[in-house]
Image (cartoon, helix red, strand yellow):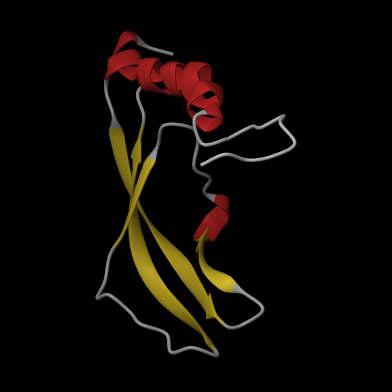
Length: 101
């Protein structure tokens, strides 16, 4: 990796498919990039286009363009090194028999 790759971010525009599920069984949104493009730790993704609302009980698929801002080498290393610690902040553990609020 070059010195510029360690500190500079790059951008790429890629077509993607956005799948939105709003049903009793499934609630979520998934973005699939065309051409085998993957997102790595530290990268940022911005999906372009008008906001969408999918009514309850329905699923919808939209074709969009997305801009992927690639993390620099230093940002990627920092994200990998600290990612597990940040995840642990989301966890709450209790070993008592009774929860006290």
